[in-house]
Image (tube, rainbow, N blue to C red; front, side):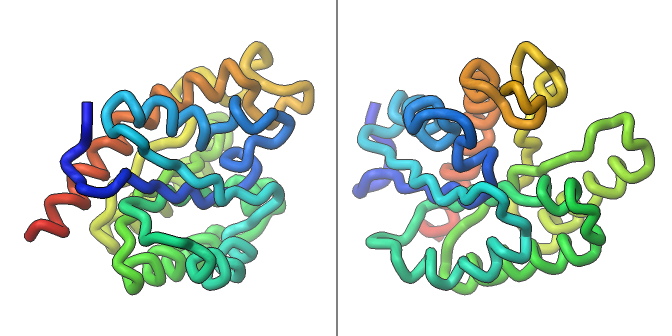
Length: 198
């Protein structure tokens, strides 16, 4: 089934090792798996893997101008998946929020619609987990963009769905994540098309 756009749908996946596919070959990584699913709805859809292992929100912000200037076409949607390394390194949530705010502002300045793939802290982090969630909700409200959790329930911390390091998803988990993200991506693409038409 062909999408409504006259050009192939182009999604830019900006993120850290979870986007890049740490410990996995190219095909099982999240961007490739999302692309596979998107092509059931949009022929020739392309999801570009712009994930860099180890990226914090600050390092992703620093490389954003170079990344955007290297693109051969303007993305229909940018998925922003960042924050996990900030949490792992104990960086202040305020810094993470400011960096993500700047990333979303730059995407908007370039006319690129965004979807935030929220990186929530595990629920056993208690109040800190709720504060992490609030960062993404607040950013989504400020920028008028959709937000959707990157991890579905039951994946994070599950040894059957993790690489031996117990931090990164294995190929089976990425399948679940891509299935989980697909409806939000399709909805965000439909919303971006409506804004362009308006």
